[in-house]
Image 1 (cartoon, rainbow, N blue to C red):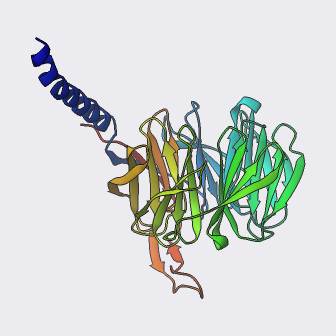
Image 2 (image 1 turned 180 degrees about the vertical axis):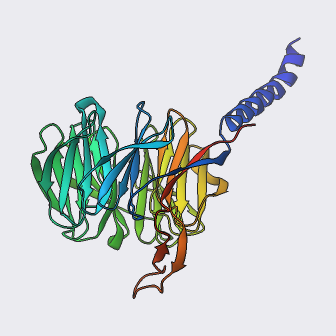
Length: 349
């Protein structure tokens, strides 16, 4: 009995581990394009975000924010005017939403239930991304022209402070523990800000293979940062140590990263019409698990964790204009009225 147990135990253990690994792999969905939502208005866009549990998608669209009912896949409202709409942050517990207006140089605060504009906060031309910090009930908006990060009280809309970086700030995320992480594109760094004291605490140097950090997502539970780089890479960083855990190639420029904590996967939408999906093989190793064909120009996205649905903004390209000096890509010219949201869901088995 004892001898038989000693021989079979390792085999049983390996079998159990194999079953667990198979079950874990089975829970990682394979995604597919499930539909498209036509959105009237300007064929000009930037970031988009979902409202958890409300089946609403907020899309920055030129001079407005388009609001879409994702249960019925149709636009339901418009928040305007927002001149040069870029980023959107939501604070459902406070019944507040915020949107950056890059051309107007303001952050627009609106009522999340009725979508009425409550206040405009002046931050100077150039605000881009924006993030809400639930640990402090503050909103953080980086400004690429002034190279500053603006902190705003999410309850009142009062401007609290600005922090200067002497580098080009891009996307920002918060960890819910009192820290904000901000890509500094021109410095190949991530700035770490204490959201309570409003002070820069340190800078994380990105891996040697990542140049020009743009998109950013966070795994709050494991403290991992997923950074999309201008040179067609995704750098995965341990937020607490600053260590680069992996640098993975993607097909083209990606302007946004998103993370799904339910499946422990990250998404990188690229301008060439591909969506790269990255999974963890163990706590410190990552690999590309799927490359999905979406639509050319689909470089930003939002992700609904409740339904595991991705939403990508795109439009029909009529022609590509020659690249401007210092730019890698030519500016696309779009077919008027062709703006839409691509819906990507786990494929049915």
